[in-house]
Amino acid sequence: MSGRRPSADTGSHPPRYPGAPAGEPTLGTWQDPPHNRWAFSHLGELVPTAAVSRRSPAAPVEATVRLDALTGSLPDLVRELEETYTDAFLVLRGDRVVAEYYRPGFAPDDLHLLMSVSKSLCSTVVGALIDEGRIDPEHPVTAYVPELAGSVYDGPSVQHALDMVIRIDYREEYVDPGSEVQTHDRSAGWRHRRAGDPYDDYEFLTTLRGVDDGGDGIGQFQYCSANTDVLAWIIERVTGLRYSEALSVYLWSKLDADRDAAITVDASGFGFANGGVCCTARDLARVGRMMLDGGMAPGGRVVSEAWVRSVFAGGDPAVMDQSMLPGGSYTRQWWCFENERGNISGIGIHGQNLWLDPQSDSVIVKLSTWPDPDGHGWEERQSALLLGISEALDQTR
Image (tube, rainbow, N blue to C red; front, side, top):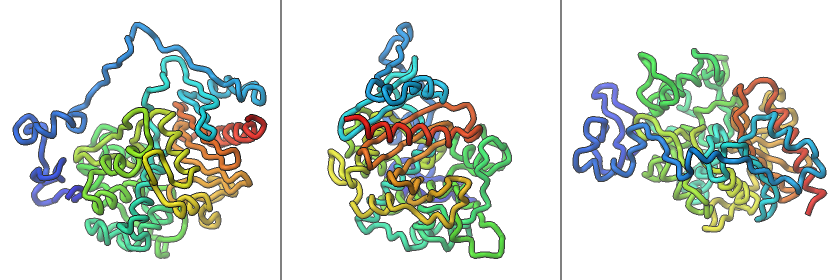
C-alpha cells in the first residue's frame, strides 16, 4: 500500500504503483519491464519535464481584460489588479463568468500554482471520505497511519489536523533557510536537498515533535502545512490510492473541469498536498461553485451538505491569534472571515485566493505572483479588494 515510511534498515521506499516492489521503479530501472508499462505514462514523477506549448512562442499572449461588470463600481480595479501582481482573476456568479482578467503572457487555460489553496482541496477529499464513513474525524491520526507513532501526531485526532489545533515544533517562516517549512520543502523536492534531510515527505512527517510548553499540545491554532500532508497520507491509507489519484476520483473528475490539474510529487511520488496543486482559474472557480452549491458538482455529489455547512459555520475564533485574521477563524483547511456576508477563502502565499461570497452567490479567484510570500500586508490588501468586489456585485445583475 502507498504511504509507507521508508525503512531506516533497508533504505526501501514506497512502490510508485500497485504491485511494484518497494522502492521501484528508480531512475535505474524505469525503462525496464514491467516498470516501463507504468513509467512511460508517468515520466514526470521520475524525471523533470518541460511543457511543449500548443501556442507558438513567437505569438505572445495578449492580456485579457473583461471587467465591464465591475469597473463602474470599482474604476481603479485594473490598476489594483496590476499593482497586486495578478496573473489571473475571475468572478463566477451562479454559473456565469461575469468578469475576468489575465495579464500579458498568461492565457485563460494556463495552469497556475495554488500554493496553500491546495489545502482546501485536500480537506474536501477528507470530507468526502468522512461522508463515506471511511474516516472518523474523532479517531486518532495514528489509527490510520501507525508510522506516525512517537511523532507529534501520536495522540491528536484527524479533526485536530483538519483545524490545525496541534502545537508543533514547526516554523512556517518561508524565507528562513533554517525553518522547518524549508526542510519540508526540501523533502518534497521543492528545494535543493541538504545532507541529512529526510528522503521524502513521509519520512519528514515522522520527524515532527510537539512544543514542550507544559500543555497537552492540542487546542490552540497553529498554522502548519505539515497537517495537510498528514491528511493526504490518511487519504492514501484508507483508499489505497496515491494522493494525486484520490484527488481526481473524489474531486477533480466530478467538476467538469476544462483541464487536468497537476500536483508536484516527491521522490516517492507522494503529492505535495499542502501547496503543490496547479490548475486554471476557471477550474478552481468550479471548486468554489461546488461549495456554494452545497457540495454538488456536474459529475455528482462531492461532499455532503452537512460538510459544507460545517465549513461555512466557521471555527472557534477564541483559539486563534486574532492578529492573523481579526474576528475570523479557521476550520477544515478554510479561512472563515466571520463577517455578515459569510465569506470564506482558501488562501495561499504570494497572493492566491479562492474566495466564496454566499450573499451574491459568487466565487472570486485571484492567482498572483506577489514578490514576498507573506510580507508587506498583501493578505490584508487582497482581502479588502475581494470584499469590495463582493459588495460591488450586490449592485450588479
